[in-house]
Image (cartoon, rainbow, N blue to C red):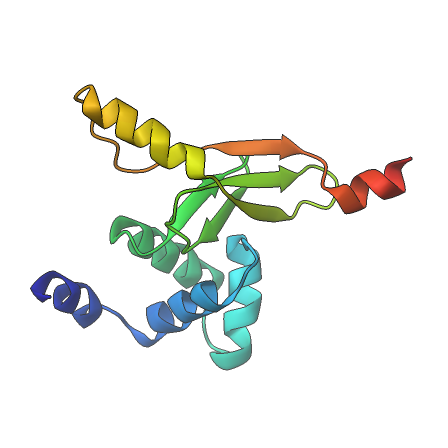
Length: 134
């Protein structure tokens, strides 16, 4: 519990608001979306503060970063075993639970590997976008 107290002792109002927003949303917002949402509650917050805060939350393992491309990062707080699916048309990200990841982790750990996290992103088109593409 002491480790958690250290992390939360460093939480500022901005960090708390950003973390709360990310925990409550099912989206995988980029920094600009986080900024626009947090600005509604904290009008004086700057985009650079949001970027710094997201970086700090990532360092504290409170936020997970999805690197969708060299120019596009998204953020989430879902650390459960899942795969992220990125729709190249609507640009939404969907969490797909994957029980098989747990099995892969168990087999690799049995062979002496230690897996801390997975970063696996599938890219393609969601069913809604495919329906309208035809």
